[in-house]
Image (cartoon, rainbow, N blue to C red):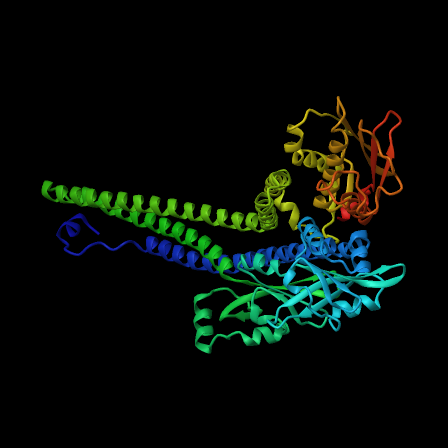
Length: 585
């Protein structure tokens, strides 16, 4: 095109074919990239969401098993309580209910009941249940038939399930009564309801016994899903057009597509089922797609900018008149101002996107932390209620004990927030490879409030290399805390109190806790339930019995002896975790 034709022509020049092809290729590349990215990220984020859901179910199953195991040993201990046996023999139950209430506060069970040989409630933590007749109840009938502790599930009139452990009480080989301990599993329903997932626990017959949806109880999973309102054909069509993913939902709950995850609870054939929505997957994929669209938009803007600049260059060459140049300059200034405004809008959009990502990460972390802290918070609520009752009864010394426990729980909550990821591991029950040195340090940090009130010399002798065992972290720390507290109590009257902790590793890992107190007077009865040398109100004698049972569950043993130079020595023996098994774990 000649210069004269350019000056005289009234029509605007069109971009050359090369630039048109470039723009078409950019648009085509954008479409292909968005299509591939959508499907790849949808599959990836769906798999990640499913894995997180399975990890949550494994954690939930571990919590249920932990609650069942913790409560299962209580009937055996209470069935050997001399005070309860004496009350059944003498038919004097004036102090029995109060004694059960004291056990409930320490054990953390939902409720405790004691029945006589005829099935009548003679003592209970809920006094309104005294006098009720349970001769035909499963927990009473099954306890009479069995020699050991039995587990029963009773359906209430409201449709909810009541989970109990029961065991008969014998006196001189004669039936005296039955002790019943209710396991508080329904608290998990409220805990699980705080997460977006719908969760249900089924028994060996496939019937739902625990669920975040109350209408599901007593039904099978298939019946529960059928009872929910399924989406209409129009709703499914709209969902399909708005969702680009290729994932086929496992089920619909309240008209929303969900994926299904299952895990086994190693208890009487129970299973736990969870349903997770796809909304989080879609949000994350859309976030990435938005970034890609923004990138291609910037690329197109750059291409158009190049075209504009090239046209302006030709205009400056061909347009000689000053008036036309001034108009062109004004137009260029307006375009620059518009681009600056567009860049400012882009910066605001980028800042908004970054803030949204931070809030999403903060919300996910808050949900995990709140789930892990629910149980310590529930225990703190119980201790506060007990302290309030003790203060009303003019017993401030015992109320201080509850406040001390609350202080310990606060420290434990801090440890939970630091160790949050360790609770989502798979394994047999809640076991995991653990360095005993870390468990000792954590237990000592939890004992810090008691140690600050006294001047006690604590000596630690630990190997330089890790001493690995396969244990439940929290239960092992519970054993160490109990031994450290006993050592502190044993040195109360000692002028120069000293506690020595020695860890050695051979065929077995051995932790020795030594003190320079008065020693042990009765080694034979030390690990028997309800044996204690403390003053009334300082303990009921269950700590060492429970600690011994926990160590036995880990495949080890807990022993006690008097030291050669005085004081007591407690030895915890645990099997060393081999290298091959640690790699398998």
